[in-house]
Length: 85
Length: 248
Image (cartoon, rainbow over all chains, first blue to last red; front, top):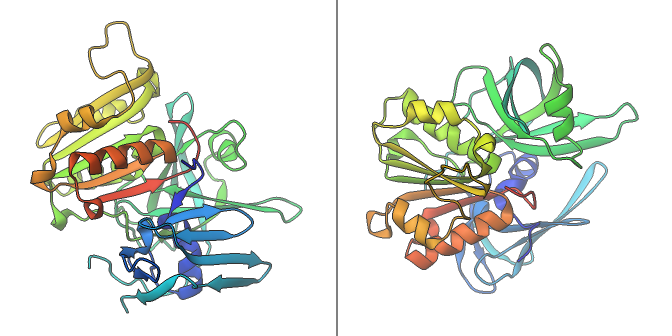
């Protein structure tokens, strides 16, 4: 068990900064196992960057790297993202 | 889908310290006035940013402990010995000081009165803060929703909001403490870490389909969430907020 693990909630501010919409209630579908979860329920790990993992199968869904005034966001593990607009 | 879209990029706002209250030897509540505050919901948090003279910035998230109340916001902060941000907030801030914060943030770990109960709130140490916002809001709107707070603290002296929780109890709110390190000699309550047996005794059980909110250090939340699922609670009814490695 990783004592440093956080929830999607922990990056709510960062995601809202990028997407300009509350993202923890957005629903993502994992492209590895097909399970859907609210972004707030995802497992979040902070290191040199941020990795968000599927709580069901541990697949790396989203990676975020920050550098100065830019941010690199990868959605390699997400099949769909359902956002309330 | 319970979430409501909150459009608009977040911007940093200036918050002025109104008051600092000592809750326990290691925990303080800081009351802020934020002129540009657009209101919040119980369970949301803010990001606090401190900037040093050389431009170095440190940022942390803190749950809002107060119910929606105009432009007033209260944060309850535990002082971490090797912390970068918390010692400044608990030791240095005085009324009139200003800091930068942004929020409210998050919509996942939120309770609104129309959602009703039953509610099972499980707190480890200062993880009680967002749950206290829910309990205070519940009291403010006169809700009688069946609400149980299971609150794990190290000792009786470490119980945050102890007197207020005692006052609020009744009318559908039940507060159960467990003291994990040094319970008083005459303590008759739980004196161990939260486990499936305690959760089953405190209830409500899975058949009543309570909304469950768990907040505290990561290992605490992990243990509680696993015990809840083991008892038969559906994972999607259990919302968690882990705040990292700090011991509860």
